[in-house]
Length: 428
Image 1: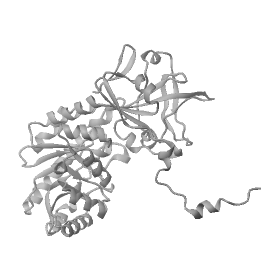
Image 2: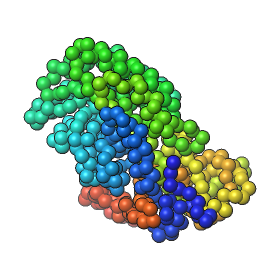
Image 3: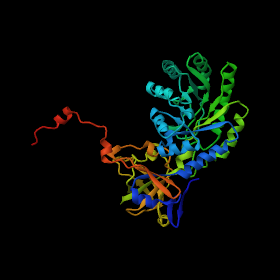
Image 4: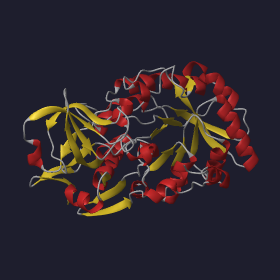
């Protein structure tokens, strides 16, 4: 569900016509529906309301301060994977006692900053990380809560780049090795082991992989308890899929109905870490048509948004619906076209062989379902400034990140005298 719809032939985000935003802010611009974000969060919270459960929004999906602040006000905790995300959560008013830190490559500085901040828990990925975390906590005179991420060797049946629960993936402790690792970690003086953590992948549209992972990990919990470990939390991670094209993911209520019977009566607090599920369908990317270029075998529609703005189609082969802002412009004859950007790469495309009505030069298009892993994965490739971001709340809208200027592109750079001097040769 999202709050984008044509009204009187014009595409709106909640109560605001998107053409109004495009005219005022320009393109490319990301637009987010606050009502959609909070609606998805609340539906998930309601689905798990009758169990001991805490929802931690996965900051990596979309780290906009405005969205983080709104989710913090709604009661969400936060799942972070870097000290930069920790900084953002603190700036947005997130509660440190409801913040968990995951990720395979936490540096000493990142661990120390999170220990000092008093976060709720660390999701550890390996035995060396446990030793490192304990040493830093001891040096700082703190005890920290932690669990190990378990790799259950379960296939989530998603894209190879975003599956994380197979034995060949870099994430987590192999489930067969987990009892020995927990036994060793129990001897570390400044760690309190409180549970287990899972995250088997992203954009998962079936509950079967979750059920398989839960069953395998509950068997591990039973083993750990028999060895004297006090298991109190079961962190299931995130990964719940959304609709991009023809997917049929489970609703929040269906997801809860499928997994809660496995966890009831286990004496475990459930932790969920959704990202895409909350923000994915809440965002669109506005872009306008710069050229229409007929070629021998196909027609190229060249727009001003490129792979530096939205890399998912190039990186994952991801599908994003592309629609005009005026409904009548979608009703003409359809043809196969490539929607491509201005980047100097053949891989710079938003859609290939897409059956759609040919748009006219100057018209604005909306690339759908880009609220997750859209802006956060953008770059300055080809020295292009990153897009503006706009938040819509009912009939009001706000620029929550201004478009980067040319000055922003070189901010922080310097030219040392030696480099400047090398360019002062005689011209002939």
